[in-house]
Length: 282
Image (cartoon, rainbow, N blue to C red; front, side, top):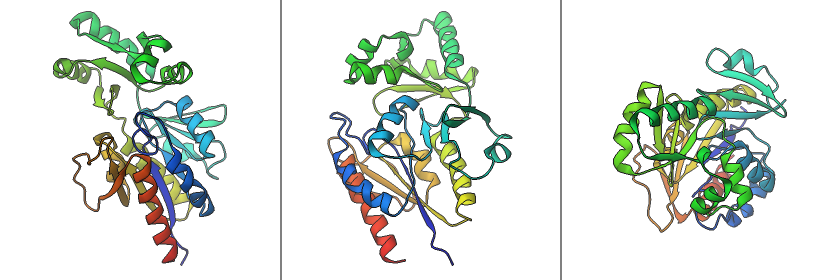
């Protein structure tokens, strides 16, 4: 019987990348080992396509990736040697663009912006989205460079907003009327289609990888916050790394592995331990 294929799904911010320094140095030590074993690494992050492409290029990753908290999936052309449309088109909108097949889970960014504008006009709720800000203003808020702030503004599936917590109940009530939801991503709030989630996208890609590898896959998921819960629920081996400042997010999940080490340090320790143990036993 063929050995099952490992597939890694991972968050980025606070997981493979330090939340404040944006360093990925510990992860860079592990990437060669992962490539040696030909293990796919699929990002599942709040970050946009443009932001993730920059990180993918630095790490030399060419696998599919999940953007904007599960709003969509980008799959490089010819990555899977079968028709994606036949498998997915009954559930998602599928379109082709330069370099990718895009799987859209729900409403697009322009529609979400339009709804938010409408909500603000009749409620006067005090929130502001990245789309309303300049790159310089986003840079000041996030600590990103101006160039990276521009990348953070190039959204396709969700809007990042700044809002006082006390206004959230009213906003969520309004969003629900339009089929939208609000989630906390660790630093900011994100508005997206109610159907969108990291977990749904992970589950979709699992089906594709199962077909690619003839039913024999073992999935690993790595995150640091409650925003990663839907992803961690969908994998065989869920890993939680320490938060910035130490300690773990309060997540309870069967089989959850809590790994010491903040962000990328914990990621390196957890992933390396699993893949070396797996390959030494097979």
